[in-house]
Image 1 (cartoon, one colour):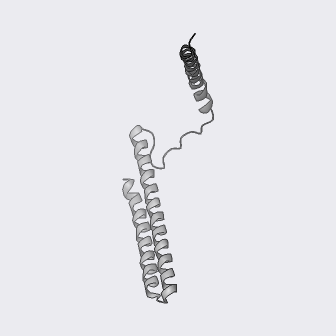
Image 2 (cartoon, rainbow, N blue to C red):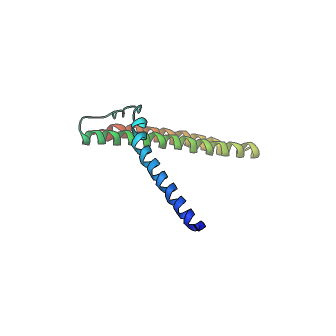
Image 3 (spheres, rainbow, N blue to C red):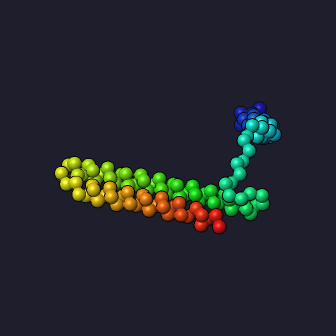
Amino acid sequence: MKFTTVMKRTSHVFTSACQRLVVLASAVVPGVALAELPTLEEPTQGSGGIRTTAQGYMYDGFILAGLLLSTAAFIWVGIGCLASFNEGRQRGEWTKFGVTAFVGVVLILVVIWLATEAGPILSQ
């Protein structure tokens, strides 16, 4: 028997064994994996039908996006304030730092206020 013929047969047997193993694993593993999963939490707004549940999840998603936007604004202002503080410390000019800090605080307050005001509008 030639070496290539032996390799083809060995490859075929190995491939067949792997396919059987994958089929067996796919039959057994989902039952084990799904056995201890927690139940899906209901949305904070409305539940009962498919449409109201989807709207509730969308509401929660938009509220989460508002929180992420507020967090990003806070981080952005913090980085800007640190950069202007470093510049003020090097040059001895603190007016730019004061303006940056004041405008940053106002920006954060406006973003948080807008995110808070958007909540009741989304629930309608």
